[in-house]
Amino acid sequence: MARILVILVVLAASIGGVVLYADRYGTPAWLSGIVPAGADGQATADAGGDLLPITVNAMNRSLTRLALIIAWDQGLFEKHGLDVNMLISEPDYDGGREIPPKPGMENAEPEIFLRGATPMVLGAANAPDQPHQIDIGGIDCNVRVNIMGRMGIEAEITSLEDLRGKRIGVSSFTNTLGFQARVLAQRMGWDYQTDITLVDAQADGLEELADGSVDVILVNEVTYSEAKSMGYPMLFDTGEWGEQVGGNSIAVDPVWLQDPTNREKARRFLMAMAEGTAIMHRQPDVARRVLGEWNGVQDDTLAQDIIERSAVLPRAPFVCVEGIRKTIELFPEIVGDRFTAEEFYDNSIMQEIEASGFLGEIYR
View 1 (cartoon, one colour):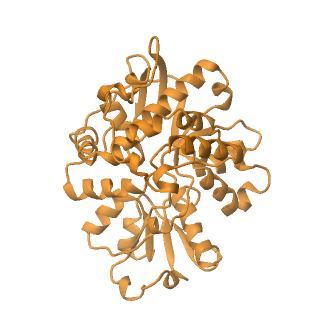
View 2 (tube, helix red, strand yellow; view 1 turned 90 degrees about the vertical axis):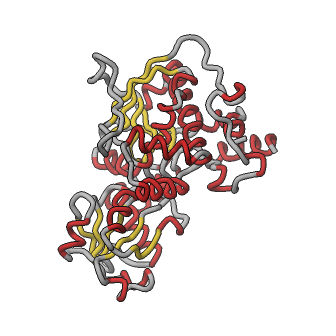
View 3 (cartoon, one colour; view 1 turned 135 degrees about the vertical axis):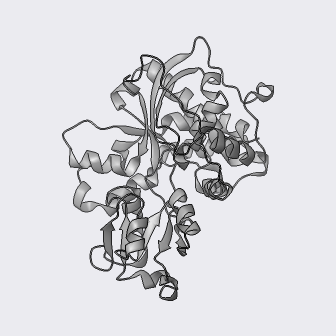
């Protein structure tokens, strides 16, 4: 099986494809458990030498950063040979633990960024003469929003077709929620400009639901849990569609990546993220503890909603290649024919990690 997997990796690399264990092939029998951090040394990479310093701009503590926080909690960055200066927001809820930057490094220049692939592509298209980042990994590649409706609308909406002509609230027309609204229109064969009305909803869109200025909103897990507790109906789960999105990703400056030391930093970071991702998927008790301890999530319903939603996230942090391609396809008025998907990613480090057998070891 291991030899077959390596062959698949080589074939995928030759066509720019991506191997995502459970996402593409299903979980093989030999990936039935997980090696905890440091257990009998089987999953330990040969970091070698001193820890390499790196500054990471993680921005926020959304679900897509859960694997990152698990890696921090479990000491996986040090295990894989990195000394991380983390730039990340405070916990979203009281009681969570802060992750402050290292003293004197609050304004350090980030080397790795966690941010959405779709906004990155669209930002580059809006400034075509400026250098742009590329993705070397992906942590949120699947369409997964819930479609929540205003009070009483469930009597009108029994199928996706009933959303035609409705006002759909999204937090931005050009982020991953705006992307997923266009996916909905494409899926139904609609013109997103005439068959639905996209509304620029403030914050999470709950205010617009309450005042009736939208019929439905597209939301991620936290707003979904809050809206559900307030009695708003959950109409559709787009996670069932099997569509790809250019979601939160691991990005770098392509010039930075050309330096061999920086490429090694990127490799070690991706290995730590891969192991954190495996723990997130295989050890929900650890994920639950980390949500409470680090992010301050004490509400059991919210924690359960977050953990259940994490099942939609990729099993390994390969670039969201199809999501990047879909972004270019769905936003022709912004991207046009000036860029190709290949200009926005480099999957080679993740392919090397997979070919080494590391991903198989952490899912044993």
